[in-house]
Amino acid sequence: MPWINACATSDIDAEDVIRFDHNSRTFIIVRDHQDGYFCADGLCTHEDIHLCDGLVVEGTIECPKHSSIFNVTTGEVETPPACNNLRTYPTRVEDGRVFVDL
Image 1 (spheres, rainbow, N blue to C red):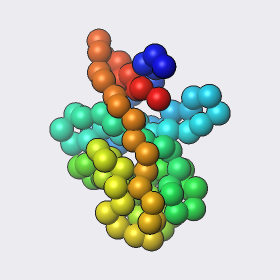
Image 2 (cartoon, rainbow, N blue to C red):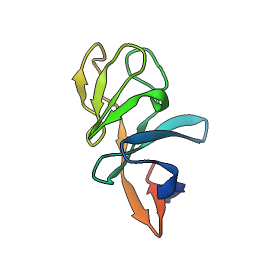
Image 3 (tube, one colour):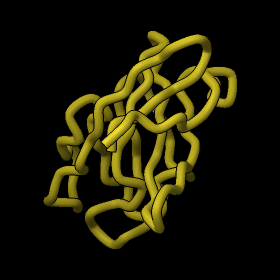
């Protein structure tokens, strides 16, 4: 599958997140504190809450409902109640755009 042009790098502030919908699925694009860009499934694995409203701190995102924390690089759960990791997807930045490989 080809790389998908998800957003401009300027669409996301440092330590922030935006929602990205593609083919009836929801994803998040996260920018960490070191200007790294990451893509993951957009719903918390605990109760399908949208993570685009979550808090990004360095390389993690916190679910806005029950405070599960996920590593945005690996998708691993760092803090329950979520038990299942988020699926993550490769990203690359080119000419000020963020591309994802879904």
